Length: 504
Image (tube, rainbow, N blue to C red; front, side, top):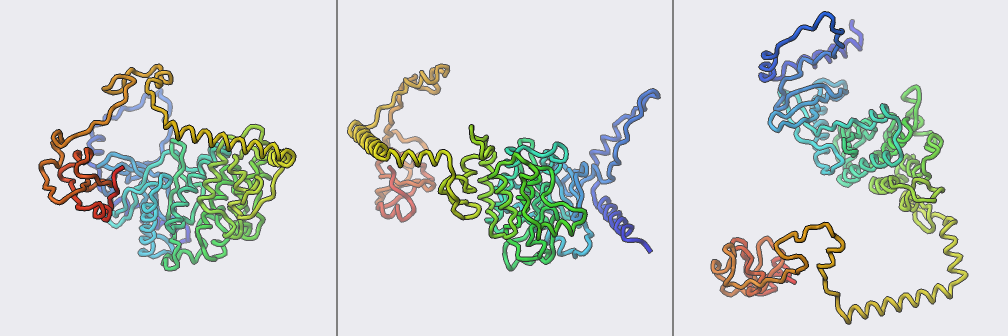
């Protein structure tokens, strides 16, 4: 009797062989190989380095994609680097496995389609773009945007923890994408460093909506009855199988930010059950115990994102705003909140009289600049009041003068002193001249104009079908309306009723 690992291996082998047999042979590759001359190595040449075995399906055609090499593999399927033979662009081809333990064929395909449709519905630059979903000989696949910058997990494993500005910038990109997804009622449910893809231009994109769920009580997706996701970044309510909302993505994003800054997950353990217990019962980790120079505002943000109570976590929009602020260079002389911007300090209530957008509670005032300004106002209130009255009076005189004298005339010749190296003229007019308004009469109407081509009996106003404004029929601007776009009105009220506005 075969053991369980042997059975898994046998099923994987069957899946691989069936996958290879379903593909189309690439005739172009055959021709290239047939014309290639093999040169035998010299006897004294160094022994060549052994190359990894090339899959039997490499170089073959699936749909209209030529398969190149394996990028990654998981329980749901494999991701293959491929080239679109029609558009000549590289894509990441996610191919669904035909056999998955504990999941029926229809359920597996339905969730695969949900993944593609959810990602395609979120039109945002920080979500991996979906090009196509299709099937080839019974094999379902998703053609996705190919990103060559790796993912956040691989980058941190290879280069170590990220700096505060870089980590905050990456996670803010992901928060922006989640804000749009949450607005559409889409819950990702598997936010983790491996699912945050990076681009060569230093941006982050959310990928892998394989466990996506709609925030809808009628959603038939029954994976929610189980604790699905990644144990290191899983929200407590997922583990306890309680109601799942968009807040579970915020918890996972906070844990991901912790990982990006420290290189380790917030909760670790020898066994999965130990890690899950820490998520549900353990104290919220303080990142400053691991990263001493972490700004206080950022530490508070992570703690709030990983709150046990989902209601205490910030929204994705608020989290993105705070992280953008944290990525700003710290202000000079600011030691109490080094690495934090003014917005970030206000967001967590570090400034006087501010409301914490993460906790919705009033924060006590702080000492320092606020206290000094308050003491000055209390001590010299008469002088401050007098100065304010004088300033208001001067502002009134300045406004009155401008109203009487009118706006100053523009002087294009002054531009020369600001742009001494600029060409003498960027157009057809001599430098320093102002173009005059040219009034076009019906006699000089251009060929495309409606003048002389459209009957205007009874019309007092006209507009373009694609325009927003309407004009008197004898206005010079009206002459420029094309004959095919001509729309006439007997009264201005009729034009307004048609959605047009009077031209200014």
